[in-house]
Image: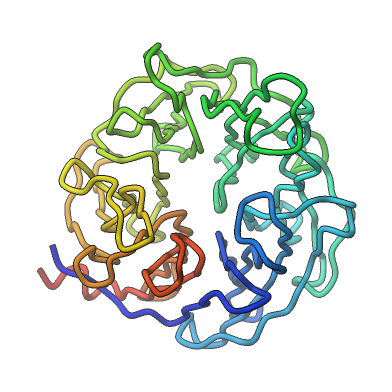
Length: 365
């Protein structure tokens, strides 16, 4: 498998900025590309540490990028942090900026803010998750169906006992929920059915779900698990009800899979960490959790078979971990923004990389 593309942005941790994390892209009306991501500030890189939302723009299809502009801070909500961003062009041409507001272990939910001036200013947040609780929605996960419906996949995690101040009360077993808006994000409701792992011995359950609409109108969803593969489920009614979760073709550690449809061809592009060849292993004092290498592939038959396999990152070159990928298409190329961690960082997944891969490279095998 060949490594493709070049890194066009590498946001490494620095003093006072210990982590740059999950991102998402959007095309602006003037032709520039917007990148929004989680920028941790302070002394800690952990998920419950202080983080804000930063933005950069590219005027040359992702080859070069502007400096940071902070567009949202947790103090606006008296929150611990804000992270896990998605971007979507709304039905009225607003930019929709989605991110999780972490008030605490009792309240971690996705919210939507809109901009009618291409990101110069942002409106008040609308909560996309009506139910109070700890809900994990990954970056670059919000999708619009052909019907116009907005669909948000989220993993619900219970908090055991009365401990709402640290990880000790966190139940890692996830349950996949889906939240729906049929009025372009003004109001939201929970789908009729959630999904739970059918394997009783799984500790992870269904974590960090994603979704894509197939050409048939069926919605395909997947979740990371501790069973050596992604589990998948399908909805015939736009995300309200689902088939029982079952193993998919994607081998994987407990690490998320990302997938988008390529404009023009309509083919699917998936990016993920495969196993069993690569397992959790320590690298000096850094652990990759098996999230290496980072690979991709194309499907020309709606996910039945996959071809044009490529690597974005190879284990033997850097010795780190790579995941939480955002996918974006620009002219004759695509951009991958992903979390990365390499030995000199001192921790896994503390930097954000953007890699640009030309489609001509994909056909040169």
